[in-house]
Image 1 (cartoon, helix red, strand yellow):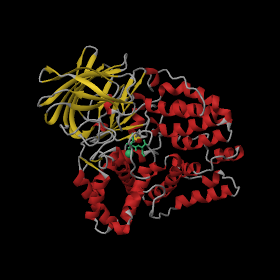
Image 2 (cartoon, rainbow, N blue to C red):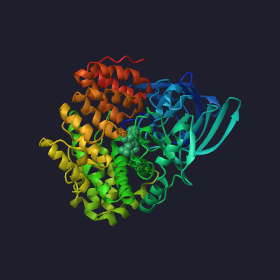
Image 3 (cartoon, protein in one colour):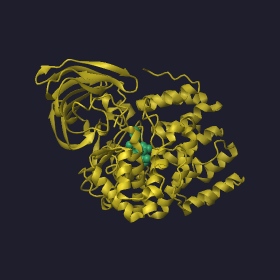
Image 4 (cartoon, protein in one colour):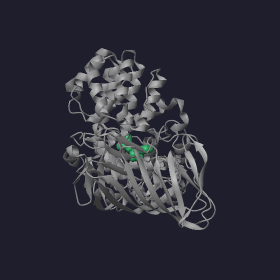
Length: 594
Ligand code: BES
Ligand code: ZN
């Protein structure tokens, strides 16, 4: 199997263990590393590794200097590092530092944190950013264990997706030690450093957050243990020992990231309502599908996200019952249709599997692998019945634990375990055809019909009122807002704002669906609230919607530029790149500092 996002050679051997020392320098915004690599076999001749924006000082093997150079350079994939002539050694040491613009990192000044006193640093390696931290075989097909030592100024705490092994302090400096006994692919390598406090929520669960947020985070995510127990009863033991959650600063580009042992979450999930426990269900689900059974390449990404979205719904059903789970399933078919419409310039991305040569996985990220993937699995479940499908799933997880899996391997396993399935579900159509899925299972949902009723009335000219929608779940509100016509009138917009009490809402998803409508409808009164939303929210998904609307609407174009200029330093480099593009394409010139 070929990974089009990696240039490293696997033929000469694979990294099996990494022993790494990391020293973040907050003044220079760089991390110095010294990494000892252990390969699974002696390496003859040259070894090729992925690297990007890395400055290598030294390479040594068996105490002797290794010569190295770079033989390829590509804006997406980076350079290919060539270590010359390892001469039968299975170990080597690399020393160097990463670039201040490394896309795997966000550096925050104290002013950019909630507490305001200490700087903050965190990694986001998925999909192809680990190569910006240290040279590696940056493909999900290679797994390694590691031990790490992280040196930080005192008062800061280092956390990793790994087991904490103790801390030693020297004057002004401390070293945190970690060990990761379960082998992981490079994209799951995770580190954060900041002013962090820990609150346990069960024997094996807890949360890390900035001190002012720690108590609310512990309350918000207190149900993680319950979720693990349910997931274990369905999919087998949780094999990662601990499950902690780290609440990141505003700039974290995703809702959540399934770093092993330590899920990373956007602070926007701290709603004070437990509204976003679905994000925890999802990231926890990855502990089985993704982190244990791992997509072999980013072209098989749907195996990570489709399976995990499926598990997320199963957890929702087990915890909150079928009513909410059915609603989420039903709404997601609309989300998928809307996403397929949005992707009209990239119809190839509406297939579950499509060629990704030259494609940036961050830019190609869409709901398709999530929602179409989950619907595909529900279609199989429906064909064979839940009982059989559940035992298939358990066998699948057992068989491929700690292994990479391609779409073809999945299909072979599926058809051997569930003979005849190919006659009942058009497997290849689901996977390789573009557009809407062939035969999605029908789901009926009472909560969904409630929204549809109000929607239909709206289309017929009857505006929603408070009593119409009182008692709605925030997801129903989101669905209503998400499926409104692009252009609503100011009058309609104000009625909606009133009916759903959107002036008072603090839910970042509801507001993220609402503000684009408010902007396009010319609801200038919402501007101060949009301004404070942008001060707090940094997740890419909703920023994309809000900045697209701001920059494409005449009255708010200049505001877009001003708001973006103010907030840009607080956003992650990935987000900056994508929003820069949105504004530039709208003809607005972003003054970036780099
Ligand atoms: N692994 C993804 C996030 C990701 C995907 C990061 C691709 C980089 C590249 C994570 O599990 C995820 O799917 N997060 C979702 C939340 C979820 C509830 C759908 C997100 O961030 O929106
Ligand atoms: Zn996911």
